[in-house]
Image (cartoon, rainbow, N blue to C red; front, side, top):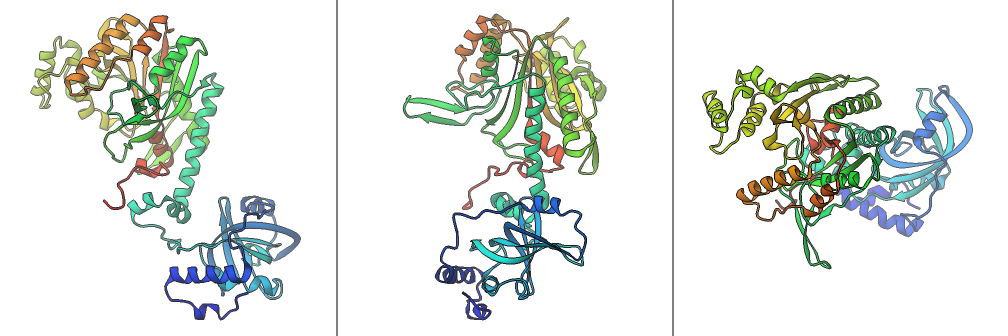
Length: 498
């Protein structure tokens, strides 16, 4: 076993010191990475059990715990070890700890993982502590940890080395614990509301369900080019056709080969659902109930901070038709404009740069994005979208240029998109063919008509309300995260060489 002079014979390079200690440990104790070690309780369980233990009281209880060493004082006499649930102080002294265990102390570095068996006590200063009787090396760390109190200051390094970010940053650790809680909360809410969870393919032979550039791959056995899913919509609608359930949902990973920003990642999580015999107003109510439930779960209240703002997920949310919002912001009354040419002229007259082939609906949507989106700070449902840009939604009765679609906004971000779903098979085919022609005109030559989906719709799909929620953005709001990469455990990034 190593003695207290060990460190005097080691290299001055921190990484080399650890490598030398590992070699010594292998020689002196044998297995440094044992396969079997059983703790009797986690740190969180220990803290909870002895919550009422008075200062300067020692129990007769012997426990076994394990964790990573985060700090060491007085040559290892005092160490703090952390597991996922909390911190416990370890005390090793000649009066309580056998020489064999204390001889291991010079070989223990910050970042090592150790197991400790000993007596539980609380110090005079109130620190819950274990008087060590045995110490077991479980994992020798070969790299120094970042300084705990400052963590990783380089943002890109935090994303690249997320394990170190979480190890040294309690905010990051809490955020990912909350992410898990939010995902569980969505699943529990949907199930309690009568929705059945299903799983649909992530590899598609025909990409569709949303307008986006796909990631392409190849199936060697089938000798078939395939695409990573950009949306599960067309498969979930087939589930409604089948009669398996009237209320279906999926929490899914989608992939869109597009830009990266603080709100966009090429791989992202959505919750998508379809509700037979419901419409978009029923879905609005569902969104409000879901958001309220999640806020209460995470914060205990429907109001919570985001940056310098206070958000409120207390329903009902503001509801405003898109033409009305644009008219209020710009004075342009799109309902009074009859043709595409008039729409482009009105937009240009108001100072908006629109393309020469844009339709009435495209002009309306563009001006909304330019002038209205940034004002939608508190949760709002924007309704009555143009049919030109909404190929899967039913028309608003009496307003054939508009459809029963809404998007939910908060902090000027789109969080959700919902329709009264189109289920007229002839109209669905007409709109999808038109959408395909537009895609081909834009140069998307690989895009195809999904004949299998259209065949299913020919069989008859019940009227339904459908919804897609961007889960990552929702988590950003609920956890006060400024970037989507702060809520994705391992976000897409350039290679280190770049």
